[in-house]
Length: 128
Image (cartoon, rainbow, N blue to C red; front, side, top):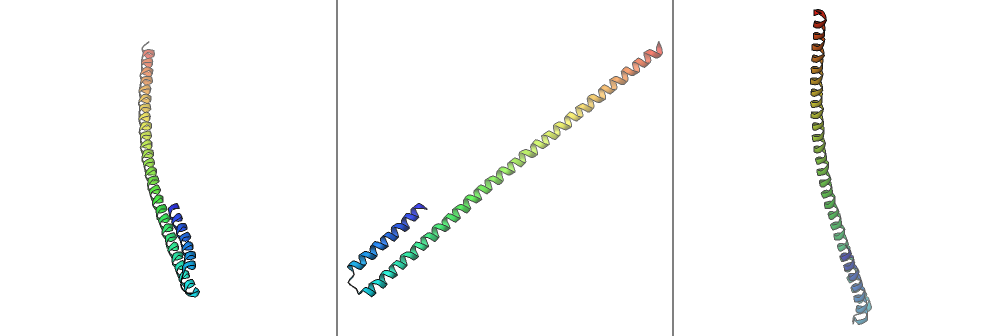
């Protein structure tokens, strides 16, 4: 971007210097010379406008490309995070189910022991 600005500035400075030299060294009539210089300057201005428009389009295109790349990367990161979240949730649920099954198993074992102990105590009381 800076290089193009320098080129445009150099172009305009060169045009002004050329116009001044043209006025000093021209063998033509003043009116004809002025018309030629005006045409030349108009051509230079058009060229500068074209360069500026091209630079603007390049910057817009570059910005769009950078935006698309950043959006793509962020989308990938979000998708990866969602995948990790799903794995973590599934692992947590499996662990909770495992703990629940273990707790129920221990509860049933304890219940059976209490029932057996109660039956043994009942039998020993009745046999005494």
